[in-house]
Image 1 (tube, rainbow, N blue to C red):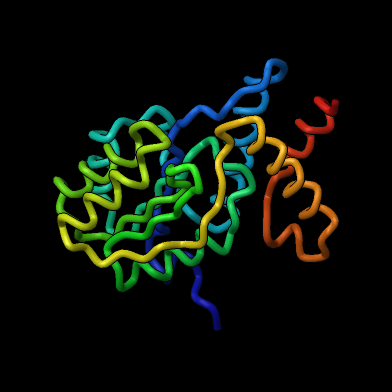
Image 2 (cartoon, rainbow, N blue to C red):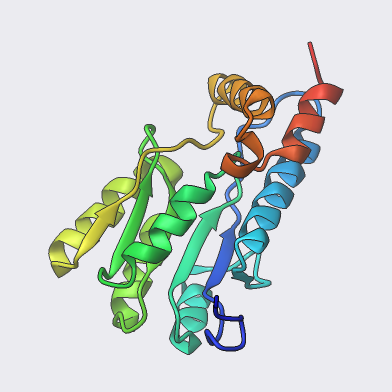
Length: 201
């Protein structure tokens, strides 16, 4: 019989770190809200406990991490249709690895997983790296992991909305996932789809 939430102990925590997406000339605030709400719904559907700290600094992340007994995932608010498989894979890999990194092609990270027991100073460095300028985040995280010689796992690449081309790509992902028989299981982008419908060109 599957374990209940009570039997399996506290749920892993997730923190949605605010990182503003590239914004179009119309509907930018709605787009940012849609991305964050879709991300929150996805993480909640995977039974993660979402920390209510949208404007968290690196120091806040360290405090949240310090009180956790389970892994902590940092997700970023400019990431559309975050794949559930990446989140589940991160949690699985954090059983035996200290850090899990989800890379973006533009040098950002879309997900950062931290295993329990990491030193607070290392968490501070990783949080500062991930929450700094988006295009420098992957390199800064890599440098920290390398210097500290941490066991790390790289997730499959994904995207964030950092340009108009990224927004166009996100629209195609949203449309294709809607047409796919397994789309609802692979991606959650309901509010993003509605945004595209309202702002169709």
